[in-house]
Picture 1 (cartoon, rainbow, N blue to C red):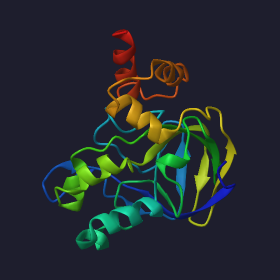
Picture 2 (picture 1 turned 180 degrees about the horizontal axis):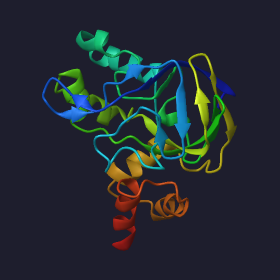
Picture 3 (picture 1 turned 180 degrees about the vertical axis):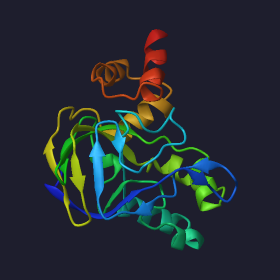
Picture 4 (picture 1 turned 30 degrees about the vertical axis):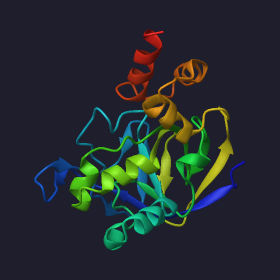
Length: 218
């Protein structure tokens, strides 16, 4: 079972702007004094690629220092670039990884209540923001993708607030296992896929569409 709570070390939001490559993205966010968290987004936080970011199932993006530590060790020459907020997350905690979490886990975040939905699927924007072609491959292979939450109750969050674990609704659906099962494993566990599809916590254009395609073939 998870520890009860995790201190918020950084909070971030920001507009769409060009990366050094010229690509438009909102991955490079700025530190904030407070986040205003709504059911369909965070005030002042824009989304460039609406297919894979944003919407009611992908409101709050979370990454942890534990994941950053892994990347610093894996790519030591890039270590100074792996700082809080650089991965495009809205909140950073010291602990927590995809292996610790399950689909549907419920937390309070400051005065908001949020629920784990899907991992953040890594894309080429990660290489563009860190200006190095190795980062996407390392993130993808390590399954340290980050993850999203939907909002069950609107509220606010500040640095020093706590992410407090409340409830585990789907203990059999670990996030790292979800990544492996849906995207990497050749022999699919159809019962597992049926469970995550029935949860109604998958993003419509991402994991939900992928799982539906797999199930429709059976």
